[in-house]
Length: 289
Image 1 (cartoon, one colour):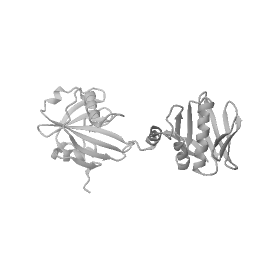
Image 2 (cartoon, one colour; image 1 turned 90 degrees about the horizontal axis):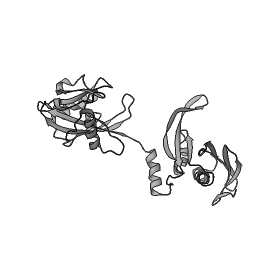
Image 3 (cartoon, one colour; image 1 turned 180 degrees about the vertical axis):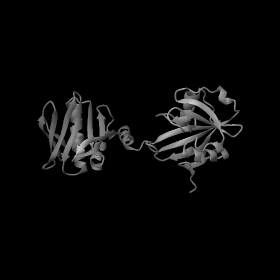
Image 4 (cartoon, helix red, strand yellow; image 1 turned 30 degrees about the vertical axis):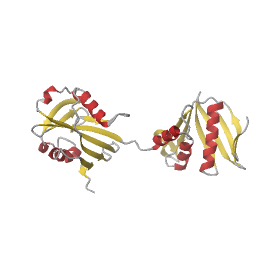
């Protein structure tokens, strides 16, 4: 084949068989190799061993990648990186590979189990020199924080509506995790409809709370909406789904300790005592500075 050339960088095909394509990389002198290993008929793994720095590796991987897509019939390429090798990850990202996840303990290195970060690119992905391509790459690497939307529903006696759920002992507020591409208010209404058969009107936001890691969950941002004040008989009109929500009940602020999580035991009495103000919280505690 004709050598792949980018300025003073040259990739020369040194081996091609059914399993792999190997390019010798030269930058005035040999500096290493880039290899595309076929894993299935139209998918492959890109591996490189190069001296000469980040920019040279980036140019070499891009050349080999485009050749694999354009001439060899690959439809998907993948790079596997030790999460601690940040420079290798940067080459993968800037070459157009999106971070797709981490395989925990997938590699055995010197007798130690190590994680493997997976970066992937499809033939039809927008390339990193385009706006949509670059933003998709960045989006794949940035933190993904959960958003939770719960609803504080009160009755005329000052009690709060709580759900007996099937997956834990603590009583919980109506609501739940917001789905991808769903705004928090819609998520809160959807959860109420699914759990109680009725989506009560949302009158505003009572609190915004940041939740630290807890019992295996990652950190999250929670929005607590005001579900309004209702006659106690409202509970007779609601229809728990019987699967996730087993029962609904009203509870006074002084009854919450031991019935709800420590988080809700801290913040719910405060919200019920001052429902007309917006509470800015960190783990259920007011942020005062």
